[in-house]
Image (cartoon, rainbow, N blue to C red; front, side):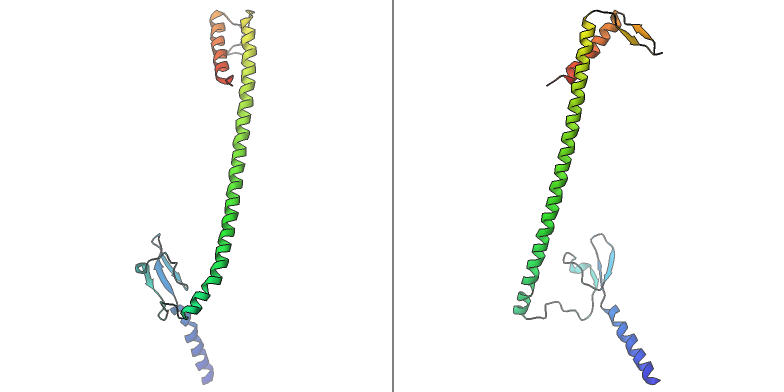
Length: 168
């Protein structure tokens, strides 16, 4: 029975060791961060509030081993980084091409609408220039003949549409 209690006590002590390996620092937004891993490189030493007791500040491995280890690790990281950059650039270029195509389609639609308005205005001007009486609906929806003042106002309106939409 004593052995069982000793084993349980040893397990409890070793289990709590993980809590000792905690880092605390204040991030760039002013929030307190708790982690079992060291803070990023951009966090200054003055912002680190707590670190594990037995953490080496310098690499423990010999210089030759340390220089050999990062080189292979750096090559895949840079390849992966450039791969992500290429994918990001490809997606960005595709988004820009889509946006340009949408803008070009909208401009073509507007140009077609302007051409249609121009043709209608030219036809209306030709009708008004013939001198025949013209009827237009009034506020109640009844068709009434235009008098000279109404006819002149309608001609000015048609001419402004031609000036605006028939520029090519």
